[in-house]
Amino acid sequence: MGNWAVIAQYFTGESYRTEFICRGRETKDQALEELRAVLHTYVPSKNIIEKRRRVYRFADQESYLVVIKGRLTEWECTLRIVELISDSADPAVAERARSEEGAAEAADGPQDRIPPGY
Image 1: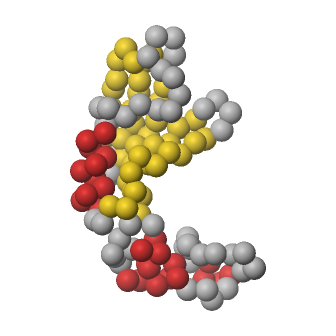
Image 2: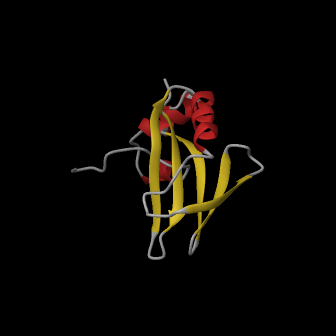
């Protein structure tokens, strides 16, 4: 069980954007391996001609800041791993995500669920 993904998050000047780089990894370690593999090769979906790249590691060692200096601009994004909580290997997290017991439980943390009537 487990559904881990690697994502890139950045600001486009108009809004924040999230791109999934890969999905469906079984374990956190697989996702971390994939994350580290794309640190020096990931290119955003916008056109940028790379002149220089700097990679910074956050203290949690599960997220990185990538700064790409282009011909005219500098572009920044955060690469990190995420887990779909309804598929979590932690039974308490997965059970809470699957529960549909109203608003009181929703205050305990994030929920993965289909809204009623959808």
